[in-house]
Image 1 (tube, rainbow, N blue to C red):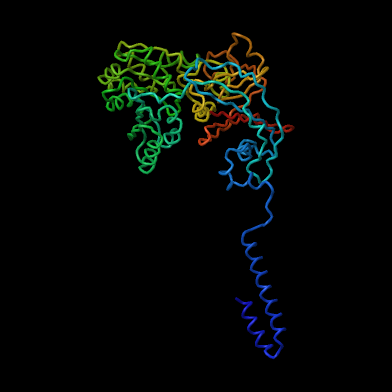
Image 2 (cartoon, rainbow, N blue to C red):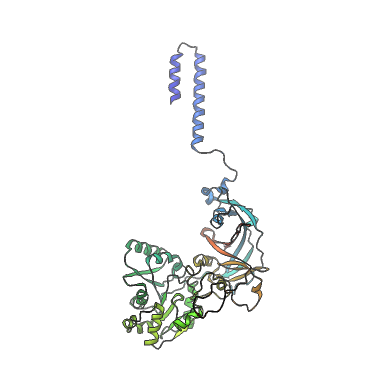
Length: 481
């Protein structure tokens, strides 16, 4: 070390000095070396001033206090519209899953906790709360979690692009994952690396996915599903289902049950849903619209193979071409299954989702014509089951929670019966006369969901946008069992 070399030269220089002076000088140099070494070690470790709440805010310590009661500041920042503050409250719902379950309660009879101001312009990632803030607000019963349904008798076909197919995997996993349902996707040529990536992720998600590629145009790809699905049938196949890449089934259990209880797959069956836009019907006729899901029994699918080339010459829109083919060459007639929804609604579909109707068998256009994150909405089913999705629970006074979609204040919900709000845009088709109307006073929409798997907890984030005068308001609803 330089200090000891300096000591040697100093001793040489002072070799005639008295021994006591040499000892004092040596001691001083050694002490100085220790001070320099100690200071250097502290500096290498960073700032030695540790804030008193470091364990609460440092990401590296999150694992050690994962059960602590805290406000997730990073989560709030994602949905705060760059605001430096939010008004924040948390509702904690405990779910007791029981074999004696009969029905969900309609009312929680619990008030939304008081909102408090939370500062977001800090370096902290979380803010520790008192245990009182995380105390269970209400406990409800739910059915015991069932095993995934067996849908091996159903084969689904979708004409799409590789890009859209990859983006749809999380949504498909919600209803098809680990059910043995088979998905046949007809996509464009090319993209071998993308295809391999999609197949690998589908397998990880428990999706039985087969990708076939063709140079056909999108319209021809859709109608080709009639032939492709028949080629991929097996001994267990009873139903072939044509879907769009934004078709979503909230509950595969409900879908399998409905088909089994209401429809005979041993005879020709053509099942689907009409459009909600009545002005379109004059141009399309009475038929199944593709986005809601078109269900063809295997006997009907077999009949269509004999007229495939003839029908292919119709060159109409895919679902219209299918309807023309069925009407022209078979005795099957369209059956409107009221649980399926095409949802030809543009703009704001809140009126549909907040209406308190039974859980749909299918929804469509949720990520295109309007925005309703069905993947996020469906996450809470892991805690309370499929039947709690979109269920409208009364909280207190005029406040209601439409589970997975919104928290609303609306005094008119007590009116029974009450028309569904037409929050969506007026139809662009000739003959439409209805104008939008709405009742809701306040509607806080679902903006995000966090799944805390190790804690058996799902946290929903409902947000009311801020204004020039008020910051955003955030209600976090934590479901656990």
